[in-house]
Image 1 (cartoon, rainbow, N blue to C red):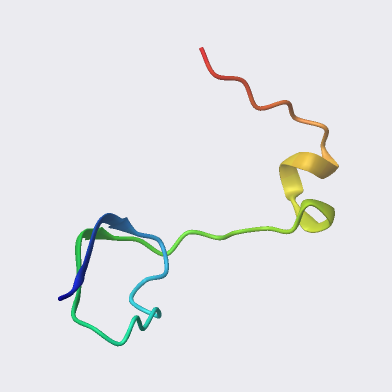
Image 2: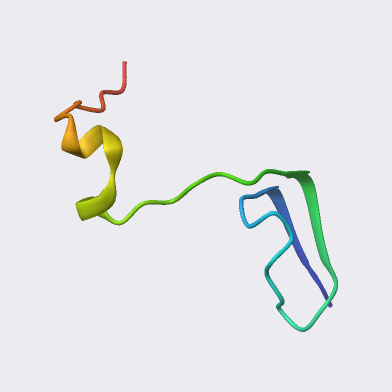
Length: 48
């Protein structure tokens, strides 16, 4: 048994207690809404 994902956004800092495999590992920031720079600038996120 193991865990497989397409993208690991934790940069390898996750431990499921079983082997963990990712196609791509990235370190991306995650923000609380109160600390989000785009939220502070009132930038709307849109999907086209």
